Length: 227
Image (tube, rainbow, N blue to C red; front, side, top):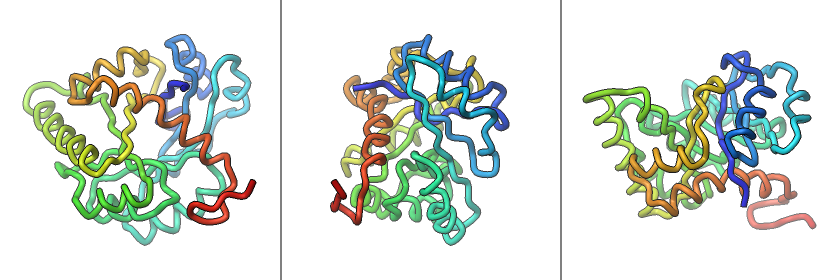
C-alpha cells in the first residue's frame, strides 16, 4: 500500500508551489501527497503542473478552519463536492465534536490545540462516522523544553483515546515548504518517539491513500455503493 504525506500547504499559504512539493516528496520516497491548504487560502497556484509530476500521485484537499460548529457544517457540505480529501482544523471542543459527528469529514487535525484532548463523546462519534484522527508531528522538531513536554503529554493522551475507540490515525509534518518535509522512515521514527507503535506509524502513512480510494467510489448512502 502506498505511503502518503497527508496535509501539506502550498502557495499561497506555504512558500513552495504544489509541483515543487510533489517533486520533493517523490525524492523523499512518498508514493503520494495531499495538498491541503487552510480554507480561504485554497486558490492553488497552477495545480495542473503538480498533477503532471511523474511517479507520484497528487491529490488536492482542504483543511477547513471554522469559528463555530454551524459554519463548519455548511463549509463541509460546500467543500465535499470540490475536494477529494476533507480535513478539519480542530481545537475547540465544539469544532472537534462537530467534525467527528460528520461522516463527510476524512480527518480531524490538531484536536489538542488549546491544551485540550479529544473528549470521550467526540471519540465515540469519530469511531461511528469513520473520521480519522490526524497527528501533526512537527512540534516535536520545533518546540523545546516545557512547551514540547506539554504537547507530548496531550498527544499521547489522544493516541490512547484513539486506541481505545479504534479510531484510524494519520501522521503528518504539516509542511509549509519542501524543507519541512521528512522522509517516510524519518516521520515514522518521529511518530514512535511521540508514542506510536511501529505498526501504527506505518499504517498512519498508508491511511490517506486508502481514504482517497474510498472517496473515488460512488456512495448512495452510508454503506450503500453504486457499482
